[in-house]
Amino acid sequence: MRRIAVLTGGGDAPGLNAVIRAVVKTAINVYGCEVLGVQDGINGFLEPNGIFPLDTASVRGILPLGGTILGTANRGNPFARTIIVDGKVVVDDVSDDIVEAIHTLELDAVVVIGGDGTLHIASELFDKGVPVVGVPKTIDNDVGGTEVTFGFDTALSIASEALDRLHTTAESHHRAMVLELMGRDAGFIALHAGVAGGADVILIPEIPFRYELVVKKIQQRAKRGSRFSLLAVSEGAHPVGGDLVYSRAGDELALPRLGGIGQAVSKYIEAQGIESRVVVLGHLQRGGTPTAYDRFLATRYGAAAVRTAAEGRFGHMVALRNGKVTDLPLEEALKVPRRVDINGDAVQTARGIGISFGDD
Ligand code: F6P
View 1 (spheres, rainbow, N blue to C red):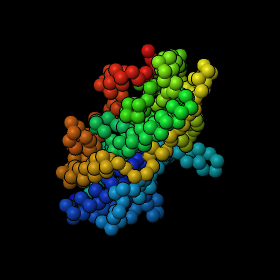
View 2: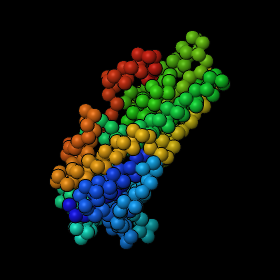
View 3: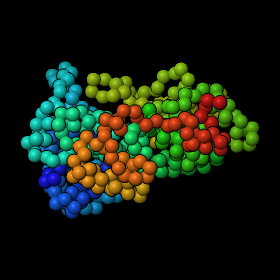
View 4: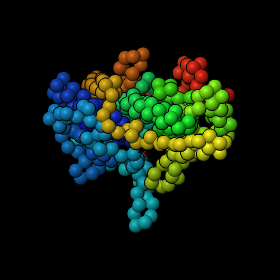
């Protein structure tokens, strides 16, 4: 391996810089290899100043930093890049241009750090002959093939701290406090933070809920003398037979944006005579310094990605399986996205300690 590139795509997640640092250091220290950074995701290959050298000095001090020094983008799929030209929507496939740019740069490997969407693009580029290695990233923890993505642990810590803080104010004012959390179609953040932060109700996309059963739980608590409740609500949660709630509809350029289910739940609760407030934690879950767990995992993933490339296993993604960092074909990893196992021990544990999922 003489020259490799590294890029970050999709929404940012705490630990991206730790992966970049590990990729650069391992490539230089172990393989004496040159490393290039790609600006703002895969399309950086086509930008005039989109490629730049990375050496050990460029990654100094970035381990505890949130975000990504490379920049990222969560739109602009090169296989169907949508842009507005003269007020008109134009869809363009620029994947061949990307492949050509990679060949021109004489890259021996491209390390793609991304979530489900970016890794799908990486897999398609691999099919076109690009020597890619994927690294699974996302606070949502919804990438298949791995037990955990980096970024999740940090988001979880922020979310459970938010529940701790809401606990005291909920108790003082005898209110039902609703915390809306990220996660898209996966309820991991709400489930894990809800258990860790002592929520009384957890609503997740995998378990459709009934409004009246949420209220029943709050009333039962009140009868037993607990005149407050904490609700952890995943942004993708929805009532039985009901739709997801979006804060912004999708259009030609952007995907629909989830948001608003927390408000809907809080409103329903208030209509039943229980005072309620809602907090949307939003991007606080993605920003700031990664936890030690995420820094360690991200560093292991970055180093493993370089080893995987050096050993020629392209089209693979690094992953944590049975506690060990390993790798598997991207195609296999991406076949089934990860979702909360509704019969698994986490849900069973939550139910056992009296948490309601709004379904009984
Ligand atoms: O996938 C990560 C995530 O933070 C989701 O949990 C959330 O729905 C989405 O990204 C928000 O994306 P954006 O940064 O475009 O608002």
